[in-house]
Amino acid sequence: MSLSLQIIETMEQLKDMAKLEEDVWGTAPIPFHQTLTAVKNGGIAIGAYVDGKLVGFVYSFPGFQNGKVYLCSHMMGIAESFRDRGLGYRLKMKQAEEARRRGYRSIRWTYDPLQSRNGYLNLAKLGAAAVDYVENCYGEMDDALNSQLPSDRFLVEWRLDELRTEKRISIAALSEARNAVVLEADKTADGWLRPVLRDVDEKTAPLLLTAIPLDFPQLKERSLALALEWRLSTRALFVRLFAEGWIAVDAMRRKEEPVMHYIWVRQEEWLQKKGENDGH
Image (cartoon, rainbow, N blue to C red; front, side, top):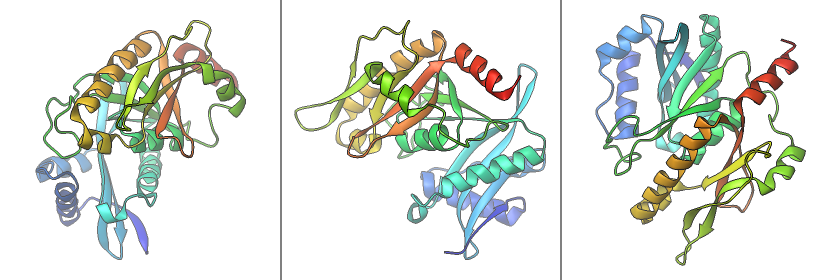
């Protein structure tokens, strides 16, 4: 496989991106005039090409909030036959490289916290952090991935001076935190997973762990009622954790386990620790 990553900026490239977006999501793509305007005014679109054919892309545009400029990463899509090959990671790293070159200091985006593949890529591999929760972020969505459930999202911030070089949380710290699992997954009678809250002394816990199903799309396909239970249970818990000062900074998966765990730390302590480590 001969792969190349390229900046998408011509009309022909943007039209190819729209076609791939339509194929991936099964809905009408972002209007061409909007993507063209964005890339000509600080936005960044990057394509993954195999033998000259576009098989993946990531699209972003400038954002501004509370006096800060950042890159807003709106969408990433990869052709079905090229998934699970690390293209998402490579596209995001190329996006970060280009964003830094253009003067951006951070990238923000949203993703469904019940999609473990996205969660593991965003937090464990890239080193971004989930800093807020948005209920029903996009309203009702009719694509195959998001239909029939509220479009709740984690808001992620990826600071470009903090790209992942090693695991953020030590093995020793995780071992000590095994009793700080506030959300677990228990098997139902038919073998599916149901969310179960645990009583944990959060005031003394240095870390918190919350489980989500490893394959939420399959669970949703088999039981929409159970998928909705996961959505509403995690919504209530995650909203509370953010309100109490926790942020999700990592994710872990273990072989043979049907779940992924988010790893939460207190934001104030995390920022203080980072300042000490960075010499600030």
